[in-house]
Image (tube, rainbow, N blue to C red; front, side, top):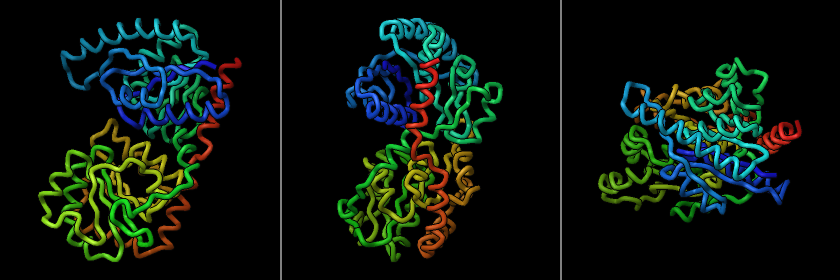
Length: 366
């Protein structure tokens, strides 16, 4: 089996493709893969490090307001389709799978036009512009949130609920994180707070105000600020990281292992975070980013909140008093956290990779 993968821009588009690859190899050890991305995207660093063959095309996004850059985008699109067709012909895949990001538009379009069975995978509860563009050309549209079906209602016969392959990868994690690596205790209730891989300004501002209170709590707190914000915390606190129960780092590499270890997560509600929280059944307070396309993070969060699988604070409502109260209330109520954890796990799809592999097998056999 020869599989063409494409997806880029953010880890939320890249990691599902890499997780799917691992799960395909577990079933088809002789499968061959080619990943197509952009040279400047995050995928150019992550994918080659995983040992995949990697090729690039040049593409950029359409700006929603009038911009001369959009003329350049149109040129890149036509040129990248031409180059993508060359790549597809040379690799001759049995199937092409796109996991989101602008790069998928020319790659999956080219594959479909050349008769390659093609699938797009939408991780969010609101469909991205690229996947909406590609929908009419695809054989199947794999989704992770039932709410997103409405965005593909003209192609409802193509839509199949699979979940995110990252969920299956995470659900199989057995090892817990060692909190002593962060200067914390393994036997003490713990809250993890982060604003995404790059951090989040409003969350960090609120956390800075909350630290004097956190220092006095019975529970301990691990804070990941993002690289751009760590210096602000170092400058704000003379006794930076000398407290018994609060530790601040810029970035955490193995987030799922921490999710499996700690008692409460406070975070954004990106697709990857949501997938990991539900796969592991980790209680959370979600603070959606308002600075995303179609407000999809809030929609992601609401899809879990309505099943009482998380709590939510909108960024416009975020203040240190309510922030601390929400954390204190949950950390003081083990039963409530357990209910939220159970409900979160019920929304997870621990066999998501197997489901997507079944879709692949079905369209190849036709």
